[in-house]
Amino acid sequence: MSNRSLAALMVAVVIALGCAPHHIFGDVMRQAEREIGEQIAERVVNAYLGEIGPGIIESYSIGLMQTMFYQGGYYADELEYEPTEYTIWRSDDSPYGESIERAFLKERDDGWQWWRLEIFGEDPDTDDDMHLIMEALFEPQEDRRYIREMYVQYPDDDEPSEVDIDEEDAERWAVRAEEWSEEELERAFLDTVEVEVPAGTFTADRYEADDPEQEDLRTEWWQTDREVPGSVVKIRQHEDADIVQTMRLDAYGEGADESVLGAF
Image 1: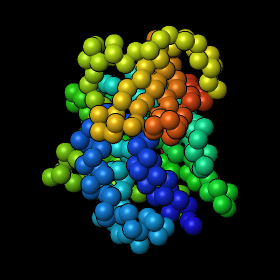
Image 2: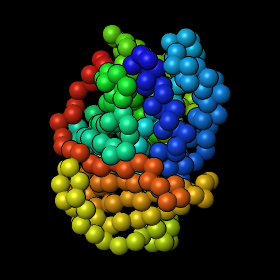
Image 3: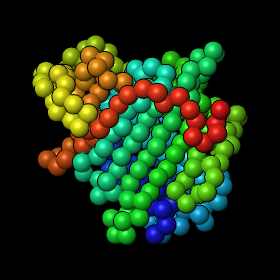
């Protein structure tokens, strides 16, 4: 299996298992599933992403960004990062040793924002490394971020490529966080605890919420008082009595202010 095929398989598993809560993505996540699911599912299973063609790869890139942008934490609104801040997350449960880095690179004078996602993993059968990089220029609007420019370097690619953004279909080029009311947050609150993750030990409020689309899926997350970028230090999803995935904050800091894909 090629590294690019492994990337396709990984994100297919993420979407299938609901590793990013539907409560966050709402209609955007369901739209991404509809658009890329039927088109790439058969080819992903057959592990030949390279045969799909440029049109499907564009939709695939949208699905990747929509799926992975909130992967490292359960965010009900804006990601509270300052420019140049980054976080690194690691999954306890992924067979691929999955690690995700999210960085807020810069904010332009017009308020548009450059962000980068890097996804690291390995093929459990061959131990081949997998490294995927995405950089996107977002235009923040209320409860969503519209993607205005996007660059991607897939694991098998020697050079990054710019993804063609269709202005006539701009609505689907968005990542969205669900807006929560104070009452919803109060109902989701469990307790305040000390939580230890690789990045340190934090006092955090622990929350839990059921997925509105899947009765057997619920998400648990630990949120601090802005001690780290984005505030969340741990997220865990349960399906019935089984733990689907646990993401822990591995590291955080500042100084991520350069594009590695030549986006700016």
